[in-house]
Image 1 (cartoon, helix red, strand yellow):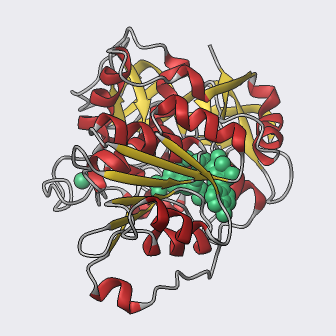
Image 2 (cartoon, rainbow, N blue to C red):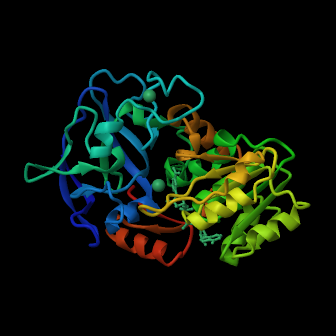
Image 3 (spheres, rainbow, N blue to C red):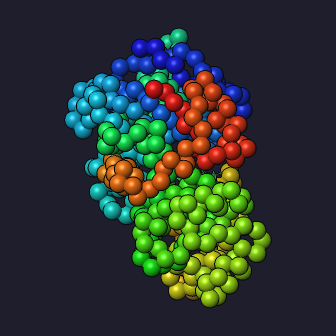
Length: 368
Ligand SMILES: NC(=O)c1ccc[n+]([C@@H]2O[C@H](COP(=O)([O-])OP(=O)(O)OC[C@H]3O[C@@H](n4cnc5c(N)ncnc54)[C@H](O)[C@@H]3O)[C@@H](O)[C@H]2O)c1
Ligand SMILES: [Zn+2]
Ligand SMILES: [Zn+2]
């Protein structure tokens, strides 16, 4: 079939919205009619050429939600009409990682996905007979996509898809960092660095876990106001002396849990140093630049601090994204506050510009 999609032709150039071909779903695959897709930093990162593992041409987009249109052979978990959130982090439920509660990093289709292909090593997207690769296994800056069933989370059909799409990446990453990676305990003190989509999600996740104090640090007072709306009890403008300030605010000890959601390695170091001696856990969510390293004075570790990393918030997508959406539907998470701009597929480059200027938390492409 012919579909409209936003193609990255060349790194550093604007995306080109055009007609491309999409083949039928093969065995284990599903055709999804996309209704909404958030614009995330990872799309911009790849489009810019900064991502060393990037490839082109490809259809970008990974924060998608839509409706199942058709299924290939041997698809039992979704059926036409189901509402789904796309998962760049799939869950096969069979590999050694999927059966272990300690990780969400499914191994089933990793190699082909990283190369931009569906699990059988081929692409369903093409143009004039030439294959176009599938970005992050999702390619959701498009009217339709074909994805493996293990990469689709079936959600409550009542959930508005323009909100549900945010659970495909940024929001679940933040929520999950607090709920599944760090497993914040009730009554604890948390610090969240960064009040973008991921950091605000971590603030909400810490609140849902029953944290008593949630201190959010950002450079923008507008964003800190949003953090307060998500449950931050205190806010702080970040800078060189942030660690000292945080220690003062916590009787000299630091926080039980810290979360880094900026992608800045200096802030990651602050997250380690403001975690409490004895048991403080610093969780890194941000993606650092190529070649950058995190500096840690080993004494911080010997005296009981721990460091964790979190990909997609440790969320096992097919099991837990629907649960997070249910919490939203139950009124526990204010998702509306994150949806800053609604744009058309043709305006996808405007979505990048808005992100570049830190205008709003998320632009959502309306594909309905
Ligand atoms: N681990 C994952 O699976 C995953 C998923 C999605 C995004 N990410 C990464 O998470 C990070 C955050 O994503 P986002 O969409 O929320 O980004 P964002 O740019 O919207 O938010 C980052 C925030 O950090 C703040 N900030 C910058 N420097 C700071 C400093 N020195 N001190 C305090 N705050 C500072 C900015 O003001 C901004 O509000 C990015 O690096 C992104 O690539 C990771
Ligand atoms: Zn798996
Ligand atoms: Zn993302």
